[in-house]
Image (cartoon, rainbow, N blue to C red; front, side):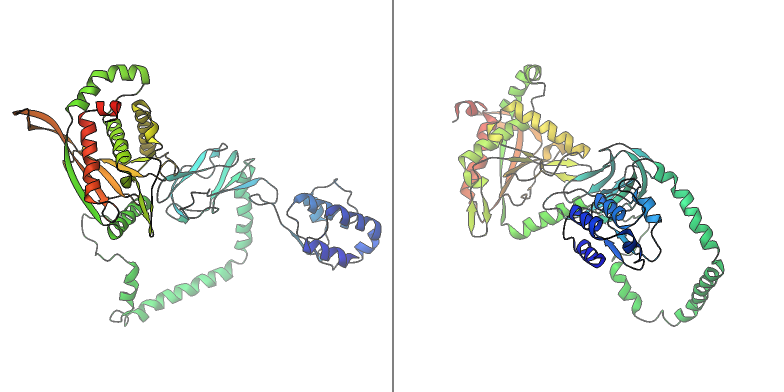
Length: 469
């Protein structure tokens, strides 16, 4: 009967209640105790099963009267017991593992950029304890429980994947205090075999001493060049320092190079007279702030102009997928934002359904998140068209690179007062160069020029948006 019980428990067959009934009715305490050499394998993942089986099988233990720890200490030495504890908790249930969360469908790993806490610090539930830098954003690793950090398992700079253990949290805080005493015990035990350790330490020393003798004939050999494969290719120089690239910078470099290698990039230019748009902002900026609580900028005017251009030239909003062309019936405008950590591109969803105030509020919210590193992957995913404003840094003219898998990008530049001919007279005008880089595999020059002309017409006369002309 005991053999049947062992097989059923090891294979997971049957419920705990049926096994308990079998033990109670068919096996006496004397028969169980007469098999001290039997192996009992408890493979249940739930602690409740372990407690019931241990009380039922071993005599002298009333059900539910003693904890598992006390029962285990009363087992006979010949019995081999294996218990599977619950995931993310230790045997006594005090320690909880903090693991790397899910970082996104397209992100498989990241780099532990910074530890926000130290071992021994107390943390609350959902309080960030570390930051992971991915190809797109920086993700916080939060504490799953309130307690004290016992230790960090991963060091800064190491690569981690979703599910990797970062730290161990003690819910009661007692585990951290017991670390020192528990370490003293092995230290004492280790001091006993110190002669063996001394001899083992002396042996490496002897090897080290003999190593220089063996290395003398090795300098002219070829092994050193083979090892240099993992070393920097450029020799170090004075007043230079080498810093590893961040994952975000690597990702940006890879995507932009892929765009150059895949797309047939072509750029067309035009210039825009900013007089009317700047006058519109100057006339209504106070009333706009008073009603909507946000300043009226120039970016919202260009977003509305881009929406109008994409509606007039739908091919600019399309994309190539294999041998097919995907036309998008929505307009999600990506806004390139430069941050200290690198370039990020948050997306304004359904920009064609927004007015000026909603666009300005969304731009301010996304730009703030991008600068403080709290922007999420979902807020940067997608996008059907990108606007890059290099003019805020003083750029006069440039050729922007497409943000894959989009098919075009609009580049804005600085506003410069230049002499222009207006009505036969030469007058100073605030002018801006605009550039459209597009995938010539999909978009012809005709559509690209028409799109850029539409941007110019709407910005120079915003009343066209009201009249839809």
